[in-house]
Length: 124
View 1 (tube, one colour):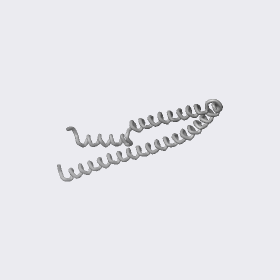
View 2 (tube, helix red, strand yellow; view 1 turned 135 degrees about the horizontal axis):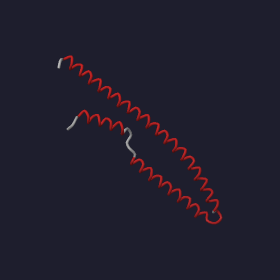
View 3 (tube, rainbow, N blue to C red; view 1 turned 45 degrees about the vertical axis):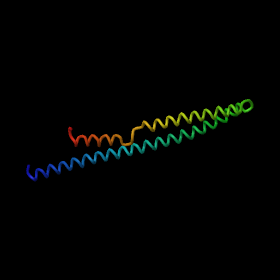
View 4 (cartoon, rainbow, N blue to C red; view 1 turned 90 degrees about the vertical axis):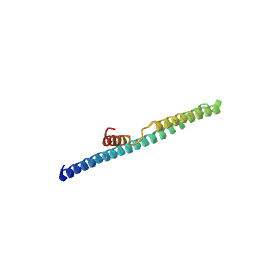
């Protein structure tokens, strides 16, 4: 191979490597934007759910206690408190499971980089 041919081949290889790196960085950028948007959506929905959930539960607690005020006020308070604690425990367990089983951020990008590394290393 002539020195000019080797230089051209090296130049072409460099361009290919830079093009692949650019594609991977674009993938990281897209995933970062998607993750950011997803987190914002989750935060908004969580805030709305918490706001209306607390308002509804407060109204329910007042309603139950007022309905049983004359006869079983302590039992009504205990039942409402128990229901709230059970709901909180259920939500906490679900949250813990969701966090434990959710895929790591940028898993697509990491997998793509791994495929690139495997391809560069060749068959072993």
